[in-house]
Each structure stands twice: as C-alpha cells, then as structure tokens.
Length: 266
Image 1 (cartoon, rainbow, N blue to C red):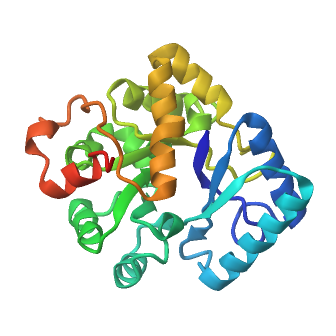
Image 2 (cartoon, one colour):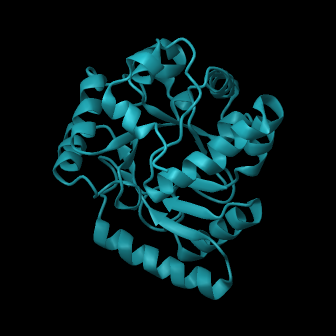
Image 3 (cartoon, rainbow, N blue to C red):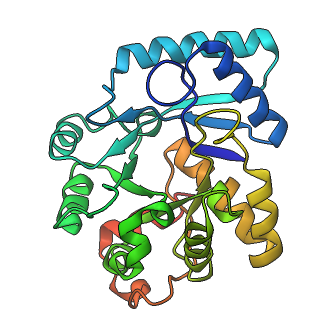
C-alpha cells in the first residue's frame, strides 16, 4: 500500500517532534504493509514550508531508516492550505509543493467556509500544470453540513482523498458516514493515513483497506490504496475511474484536461 498524505518529518509542523518518533512511525507503517510514504508537512499561516529544510530532513530520515532496516520508500509533498498567498506561490513555482515534483498537489480547504470561486482556483492551478487532490473532505465541517458543495468540483474531475481513519470510524460518526457515502458514490480516488503520530493519528491503512475490500470489493480497495496512489507517487496519469454518482454526465462532458489526467499513460 502507498500513503500519499503523511506527516512523517519531525519538527516541521504538528507531526512528530523528534527523529526517533519519525522512525517509530515509519516502522509502524512498514508493519502495516505500507511500502511508500509521501512526507507532507503543512504549508499554512502557522507552519512555514521551507524546501531546503524539508530536503535535509528527508535525507536524514532516509539514512536512519536504512540503518534501521525499515523498508519504506519516502517521497516529498505538502499539506497545502488554500490561501491567496499559497495559490500565487504555487502558480509561480509549480513543483515547489507537489508530490515528488510532479503534477499532483494535495489541497486542504478552510474548515468552516469553503473559499468562494474554488472552481476558478482549481482551473488556475491546472493552467499552471498542477492537478489538485482534495484532502479529507469527510472531516471538513462545512462539507459535513452540505456535501452537495462538492458536486461541481467532482463534475470538474477533482481527485479526492479520504482518510483511512475516517473510513473505520476513528474521526467520529459524521466523518465515517460521509466517507462511506463518498465511497458508494465513487467520489473517492485515494485513501491515505494523514498520520501525525504513533498514537492518536497513527500510520495505518490496512484496517481501512480490509473494510473497503469487504464492503465495496477487493478491486476498489486495491485501486484506492495501491493503484491510484502509485500513479500519484510516480506522477503518472490515473487509469479510468468509475463514474461518479450524482455529479453530472462526466464521461461525455469532461474537457480535454480532465480526460488527459484520467486516461492511462500506458
């Protein structure tokens, strides 16, 4: 399994404070069956996103994991908060915040009021060569109050990441109910841990994989936890995805840039 949203790097945000904690989290992830992790420190008004520091921490952690015999492949990304300043910087520096310098960008909405004109923001990012991935909408209070807000974004082809812990109920009943609604309606493209520590927010995907396999089929679990995350990690186009329910006639109405990102590069 491949985890594309994981706060593994120590001392950068509200994730682990020490490298020992980072190593322990990586060990837990490996034991859970995770083979690849994208390290995604926050970029918001509270935490500064410094590429040089991140690169140094990544190199240090890779060395420590090799010495410890922990077989995890690390990648680099960002938990990118939607603010005007961030958007302008990402457009000016398209590979700064993306997963492994490719096209995929994890984006997080404000908690209580989704920004006006998000469709235009998404288009601006795409025109800069970026492909946004909306992180954990099932946990967003504004989306919980009105999931219909997402329909135009889904119709535009927005990629959606749901949290593994939400699928199994670790974030409460509202988040779990919405996660499964999105799964039933084919609004989910990737499951990730959004791990922050080894206790309350641990790096575990297996329980969610097994529940999704039992409820929606083994193929769905593999697509959301292995196949799509691998394409995202490698910067490849996603294979064709199941049509989303209730978001319009997407297969016939998708503009060319959506078809390009949802068609296999092979």
